[in-house]
Image (cartoon, rainbow, N blue to C red; front, side, top):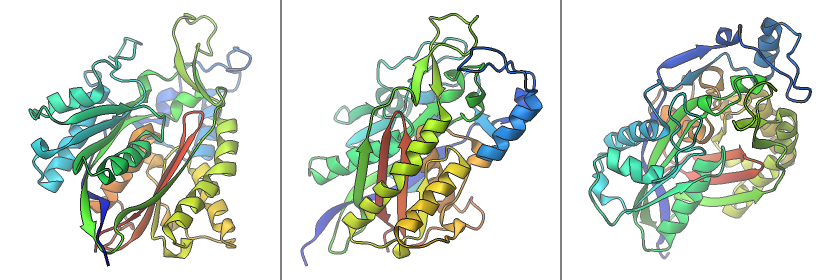
Length: 360
C-alpha cells in the first residue's frame, strides 16, 4: 500500500487566565433589553439564575488587565512547544485564529496590524524569516478553520510543520449592558501539526464545512444601553437564533465529515465541540445520534469545560483537547488509535467538523 501524507498533532498547549469571574460578579450590573433598549425590571439574581439554567456556566476566566490576545496566544504556544520538545525555528507556518486582535484594556479599538501571528512569532523569540505567518478570523470556529487550512498547507507538499493557535479576549468587546456578556470569556489553545507519511490513515482523516450569512445572529453593534456612545461597537448576539441555527445544521455537517472518512458514529470515541452553551451542545449531539437512528446517547462522549471556563471562542476546542491529553479532565481520556471529532459553529455563520484519528 502506498504511503500518504497526513496532518498529525504532535504537541498541544493552552492558557487559561487566572482571573476567575463567578456569576455573582454581575449582580450589580445594569442589564438592558437589546430589543427595547430599556433596563430590565427583572432582578439580576433572577437573570443570573435563568442564565445558569440555560447555559450551565457558573464562572468564566478573564485576562489580566496587562494582557492582550497575542500574549495569551504566546503562552499557549509555549506550552505546546514545551510539550512537544520541538524546536520552534523548524516551523514552516504559524496560524493564529482570533476575532478582534489585541484590545488593550480600557481602549475599545481592535488592533490587528501587524498580524497576531507575527506578534506571537516575535514574542516566542523565533528568528527564522522563512516562516509563513497568517491570521484567521472566522468567529468561534476560527481554530477549526485554521486546522483545515493547516491540513491543506501540509498536503500541498510545501509545508511540513506548523503552529496553529486559537485565542480570544472577548471580555473587552462584549456589550457591558447585554446579558449575553455573561457567556463570553478569554483564553488560548495551541497545537503543533506536522506531515507524517503513513500507509494507514492517521491524523486528520476528513473535514466538512458549511457557511451561511445572517447578520442578525452575531454582529458588531451599538450598546443595548441607549445612553452609551453610538460610535462604540460591541459584540452582540441573538442567542435564540444561533441556537436554532446550530441545531438545524451542525448535526448534518458532523455526519458529512464522518461519511467522507468512511466511518460510523459507533467508531467515534470523543466529540470535542465548541463550548458555547451546554444545553445547546447536548441538543446538537442528540440530533447527531438521531441521524444514526439512536434516541439515546452517552454524554461522556462529549467532554464539557463551559461550566468553569465559559465561551472563549476560538480557544475552546484546542484548550479542551490539551486538557484531556494532559489528564486534566476527570473521567475523560483520549487514547492511541481513538477517533475524535473536532467541531465548532459560530460567527453568522460558519461550521467545521474535522474527523481525527490519534496515532497508534
